[in-house]
Length: 176
Image (cartoon, rainbow, N blue to C red; front, side, top):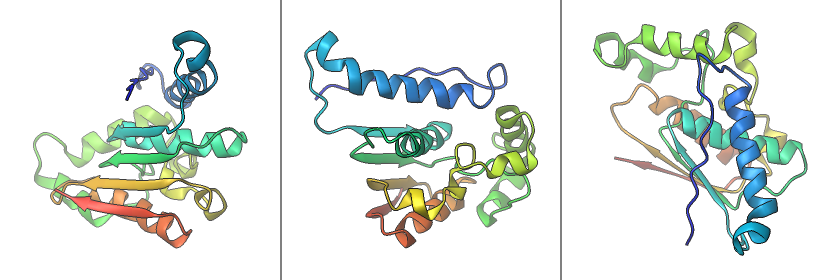
């Protein structure tokens, strides 16, 4: 099966919405142009990403729904960074307090670099996907969420998966 990796611009040089728009445009091109340019018919499309890429994968699904475009057939999310709201603290973020590589200040910096504004802007479901409304989540495909037990992003992934489950999405969580 063919695998495509869509490159997208990164913050802080290119904050929201650039990375999301780049990823969605790549997805759109693959769905609409793959047959004409490569002779491949995209029958089953799975969108995946890890960390910020997991957040981007969910945002691509959100945009597909909002734009009445083909929704991916599945999502594979690996420890998705689903919350950029600095005012929404989750228990697993306590792990950053004594982590030399992924400190709480680093998470705040990365969130701020992505949003460039923070605060209420981070409640946008394209920025913090845990805020995706139930009306959109109801249209989501089968989703698998892979989480590490000792990871500051763990509770973001759990929250996102539980929100999906409450909306009726077939979702599974895997711990490693």
